[in-house]
Image (cartoon, rainbow, N blue to C red):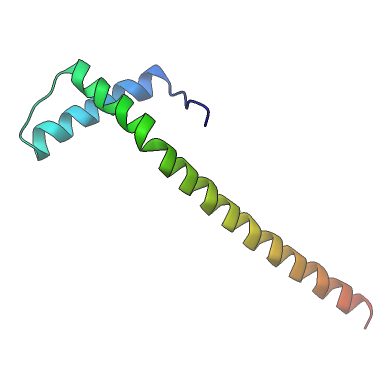
Length: 82
């Protein structure tokens, strides 16, 4: 899988959210560098699974739309011959 690039602004926001989570939910404040390491770890180790699931969901949604379109075309063809 290709590395997913995020903007500097998005990365800064995600790091801030990680720091907030550790502080508020785990009562374990962490610094900027550790939060960045956590982000990199999850992006590398967990992100691929979510990315793959997203692609699978998109494929299912597209297949449903194609089936609906095929049904509509069939109905139009049927109506044209009546």
